[in-house]
Length: 505
Image (tube, rainbow, N blue to C red; front, side):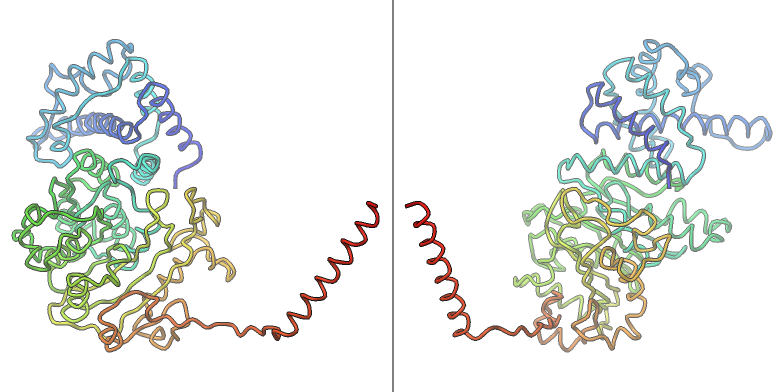
């Protein structure tokens, strides 16, 4: 976790951009991303140069030619603002656009890099501030970038918004990624799910990165993210890089428009919160997906996509709008039937309607399922999250201290604090879904529903369909007694008014 001092340094960088005339948070983070990439190139060049000195026969990759040394961060950072501005604008950025040939994800996404910092003074201030922020430690580096990304929350740009970190953490903890997984997010945005999955593997399988084969898999073939917004691809790539993943597969793809036959049954884990933009035309939708389910609705098409991308035995934790759980169209019912009958539907977690404020107040749920192609659903586990640790209004202020937030808090919650953060309880009960959770009554916050009940209800997956509400017995006064009380009050009012009239006369 980053300190208040580091946060205030980032805030000052942010303020410098705003006062310098760049007010779009996405543009700010994009320009910071370019500068961080340039800084990292310089660090890599220094490392390769030292390697060449120590091991003259070892293969090294030097990106800067002898006549390009002034393009390096360590060279231009101490120049006067005017000179620095000319070097960065007219030499460094054109140089960035030539790097795509080295095959790395980051270089590929830098090919259309645009420099929009308007004046030398602002560039000099930002370079100086970034240079004084400690970026050596991977955890600090990653957390700093995450903190910068959290500021996109004020943008709500083009429907792009970040899934809250604690919701991502809950989904990753529930899925428990392993070092052998191939993880995909077909609408990756800033790559929050992939980053958290990587951090989980590092934390729970520390030896996995010691083995050369596992290490290569982790850095090059474990993480796959698609998006059709080039800005998001750049930001997502940098997010992965700063969290220590060297070369993830993050690429441009319109997931719903392109056929996925080459990627079919390729991934063992899908984590996603795809955008739900309403409806698409049949003509602009992948024929592969239309064969799974005939629909124009993006939320259903994404579910069909997940089923295509998962290999048998693969599992998924994905966020869907609540309408997917009870929608009455033929496509809605068919997809739910497929999840229950043809695959193994493991659980449904209902999220509170304020989870995605201030962007959206829509009610959502997490669907958890395993692809089997042969059924396997016996019981479906339901959990109703009523509080996720933050207020459910537009401000989304924390209801507990930082160490008691999230699904795995640093400090255990007291019994009375559960009502403000349900996530640790949800995670604990998820792992007991085949045990004592089966005995829970449907009046509880979590319970299991047998497949036969779900079939009887036409594959309706809304929690409220199965939850039993216990109404407290309320004793009401007899109607005659209420009338007598009203007559008495009326008499008192008349008496008071008569007294008032007497005083006025």
